[in-house]
Amino acid sequence: MTDISANQPGTARILVIGGAGEMGAYACRALAKADEVAQVLIADRDLRRATELADELGPRAVPLALDIADTGALAESLAGVDIVLNTAGPFYRFGREVLSAAIATGTHYLDICDDWEPTLEMLELDDAARAAGVTAVIGMGASPGTSNLLALLTMNRLDTVDRVFTAWRAGALPYPAEGEEPQTNAALEHWVHNCTEPIKIWRDGKLVDAHALEELTVSYPGRGAGAVWVCGHPEPLTLPRVRPEVRESLNLMVSRRGLMAGMQRVAARVRSGELDVRGASKQILLEPGTGGSAAGPAPTLPNLFAVAEGTKDGKRLRVGAQPIVLPNANMGEMTGYPLAVATLMMARGQVDKPGVHGPESTVDPDTYFQELSLLVEDRPGGPVVEVVDEAF
View 1 (cartoon, one colour):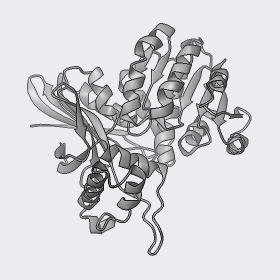
View 2: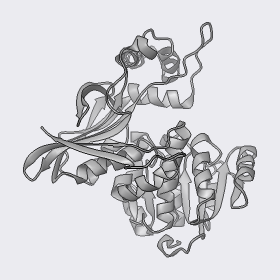
View 3: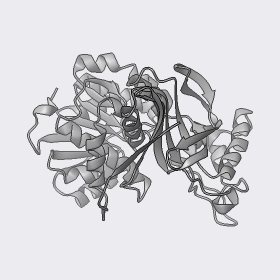
View 4: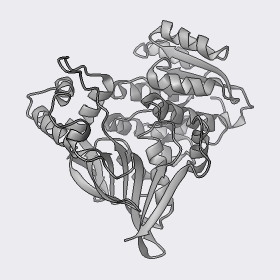
């Protein structure tokens, strides 16, 4: 196994699985021009797309045809690689498999897994990763990823933490034009899956079974209270590992009420067996009153934030955090750039804790947000993250 912390500038060899995809391509773009990187292997089932991206990025980018369902080819691709990034789903099928292969070859690992089921499966490999000296960071995208590190900033302000919430804005669905048939996509189907299937949440100090779309009210310091809806996501499974006193940890959706009402109607049809996830993904695009102003007033809560509640110096305190400077031109930037930043921190030896971790266990949030802001074009001056608190 390569000791990343001993690497000299420009020596890291990085394999990006799914590197020609929407998320992976942005990670490759950031890595290919970084001083820490000697080579970026753009591994993808579509060699043509991988080759086109490599040609765009220059001599440090090398295309590689790879189907990760081929275990022999996967193991071979990891040979001699310092870090592997997994951006290829579905993670319920390939998350544990790719991480196991990385542990077997002593290759450090990061991914963008945003499913709670494979998150639990990969956390089970913690002992094996520690024994192999492998550092694995799972869920290092926008949410999870950036959201976890916002939560860490809020929890670090408190002596004790009772509740910690991560939240993101749901909306912008691919509605069909009038007269056209609705067309689903992988992102929409994934969201519908997380909203309609049974989930795990952290409540009363333990993991419990639940259903998504439970409506709650959350207060953000200086913004007041707003409606939110529970989602199935990895953050609630990993955040209590760094603050074991946490009694409740949830991932929440911020949205116009009409969209959530439409999703609740669709979810009821999935749970009754009338619709499968793919059918539900098309149906949500046909539900009335779910898009734009017809869905109700826009939320007043931030689009991406974390809130923690607990005590500081014996007094009750609520702390909120949101990014001020964030790559957000599209989902590829919002997910791929965070992955690249954490990878470069790993290449410099700043992320070097053997085991399987959520981002909050091993990525320094201050360094992360400063470096993430450097990837924003026309970056404004001033703070890159807001952290505010209020007594309650």
